[in-house]
Length: 383
Image (cartoon, rainbow, N blue to C red; front, top):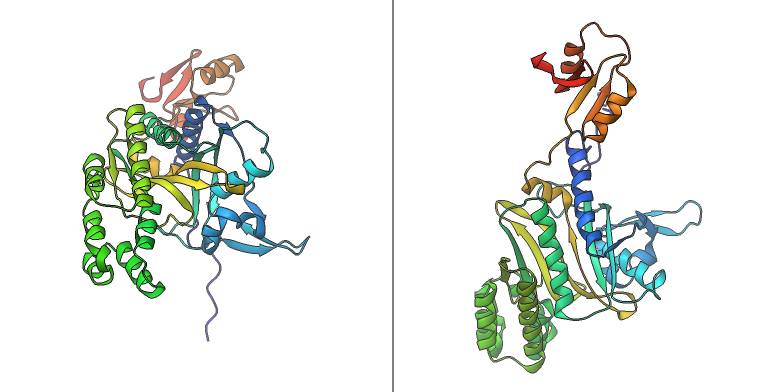
C-alpha cells in the first residue's frame, strides 16, 4: 500500500482553467468591445446572477438546458439551486418578471460566465464565457435580421475574417415530418436519420415523403441556391409558411448587411430544442467551433423573442490579437503628473517601489518596453 501523492494546489477540476496574462485581459477587452457595439444599437445591459433556484432557472426555455446544469442545495433555505449553463433563459425571466411594463421591443444585452456539466467542445472546457443580445416583443424578419447584423458588426469590429452565418428553420423539419403521419417509432427513426444526414436511412423510413426530405438534405449550401430548391419543392401549406419566413429573413439580412455570407440548411434541427423560428450559427474560416448561435423562440409568457449568444473566448482565437497597452517603467522619484499623463495617453505604468540601481535593467525585468528618463518615456534598449 502506498500513500497518495501530495495534493497539487495548482490542480483544478476537469474542464476548468485559470486565465493568465495576457489572455485574461484580452478576453475582458474583447467582451467590452462586444458590449460597446450592443450598447450603440440601443441594447441595455443586464447582469443576472450566476446561481438561481432550480425551478426558476429551468422553467420555460430553460428546460432545454437541464441536462447541462449543475445543481446544489442552498444551506439556508434547503431549496435546490442551479448554476446557469446558458444566460438566455435568465434574460427571458428578467423580461417577464422584472421588466414586463417596459415598452416593446425590449432590447437587452448581457455578458458573463456559464458552467456546463460536460463540455460539448473538443477542448473539454466546462466554464465558458457568453456575450449576447435578446430582442423581445416583435415577431418579424426584420427583428431576426437585426440580431444577425449586430453579430456581423461585432465580428467586423474585432477583425474576424471569413465570417459566415448558417441559417436554419427547425420548425420546418418538424412540420414536414408531422405532415407525413408517421407513427411514433418510425418518426423517431426518421428524425434520427435526418439528424445524422443519412440519406439511405431517410429513404428507408421516409415513405412517400422520402424524395422531398432527401432533396432538402442535398439543398444545404449558399442561401439563394438552398432557397431556390425549397421554392421548387411541393410543400404542405404549414411547411411552406416556414419556408417563406426563412426566405423573408434572408432578404431582410441581406438588405441590412450587403455582401454578408449566408448559408442555409433546410433540415438542420440539432441543438435547437426550444427554438420556434429562424436560427443561426456563426462560423469563421479556419475555426472549427461556432463563434456563436441563436435564433427565434418564445420567451416567458409565450412572448416572441429572438437573440444571439457569442462566445468571446472562441472569437478571440479567430481574431487578430488585440493590442496590449505599452508598459512604461517609472523610476523612483518620477513626478506623479508624469505617470498620470502617460496613463491618460494609453500607456500602462509600472512604478518603482524603491531607489533601484539600474532603472533600465529593472524595466526590462518587469517586461516594460519604455522607461521614463528626463521626464519622458524612452525605449529601454535605446538609452
